[in-house]
Image 1 (cartoon, rainbow, N blue to C red):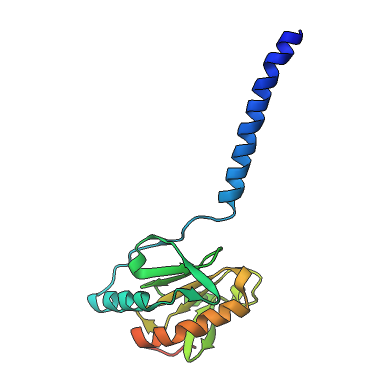
Image 2 (image 1 turned 135 degrees about the vertical axis):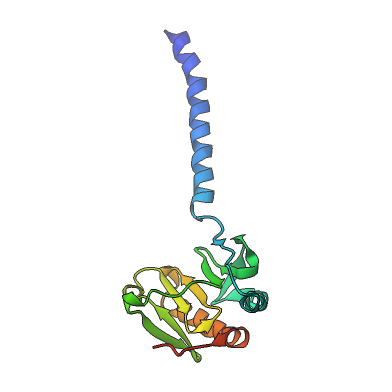
Length: 169
């Protein structure tokens, strides 16, 4: 019986070592959901050029968070921080059936769904009155202060690279 017990011990140590390594790997990678995905929008040549110009002018730091890698088409978006604040240019219209609230930051109106206004969940801000449309997804970890800062920092770039079509209601 002793021989059997000894032969199991090394296997148990090995198993524990594998489990410990797997746990460390999960801890190291599990805190981040991976790079955000930026889709390639179907845009007119004018809107395509505007998005590319906007994204190329984006800062390396937004609301105190450093830029991070994105998956997909980086010509149409960028991200900062972990969890990531994600900007996407060339998005579709906001669902107005939800009666979104208009938040104005440095002259740019952003629509945000009413159930996301209070800051206890992630918020999606869309400059719906501009073409091409720009969306900023802000995790609740950054709300309200860093979210407001991000909108204000992006306002001059949205004004410079997109065209205002309708005011935020």
